[in-house]
Image (tube, rainbow, N blue to C red; front, side):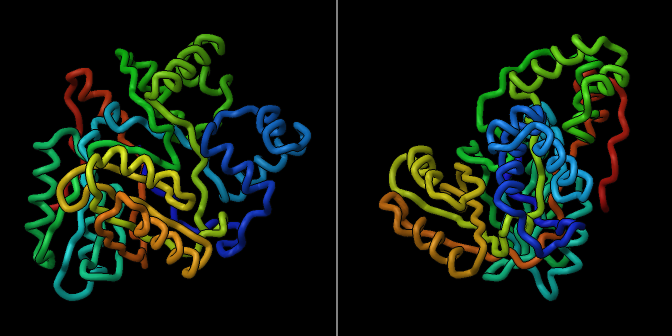
Length: 330
């Protein structure tokens, strides 16, 4: 599960927003990163040639990257926690140190009563607890508050759906690795990389996507989409948290909505072109009848945001093979 729009600037004019047609193409690539040029052309009202040329330019300039996002349960990272940290002194050094942790997929310096927001992903609750223990042991950290994610109701970069698991063989894992690097890699190239026919490769990839094992999505800089302001929202609700989250998720401008337990009932990500519009969105959430209380934090510096997974290590673990456990900071 991917939870928010990337914040790294585009190398092709970090402060320049896309025109309406490019923005429409990006939205389509977020939904289906492997959509054909003809399909994209039909959806945005262009010729096939024009759609292909625009997509190629977006890819070549780095405005958008199309990657395979592997389902968290398949990646062995299904236990997810949203963690708020208070620290002593500057937040810069602890943020950089936490960002080296494999389990820390998102690290942001914020303004408010907490200094940092961290998203942790681990294989199970025991592994998640170990990561939280590591955070508490850091010398600068003086408070750790946790929201344990139970389910995603809305996610800008993933299709929110149930995983239909099936046994993955070595070729499936290799295809997932290739898709994670380049989600729009041609079937001919993918077939060569795994030693299968093009038809067999296509059938495997379709099965991986249809089962929810991987979602191919376009990652684009927030600035290119005209997004200048970003915030997180922690919400306490009345009654059924899932039903409340589904109603809250209908508001435009929320890029993800999670249900869970602990510090909040629902956590949301919000973005907007301006501070005034961000404030309006936050007020719109606060005004929902199911919302009992709301706390917001403002993202000042996203230190890390990573959807990549060491799939070779995951595959080895799934097959019971010896593996390199990777770097674990002391």
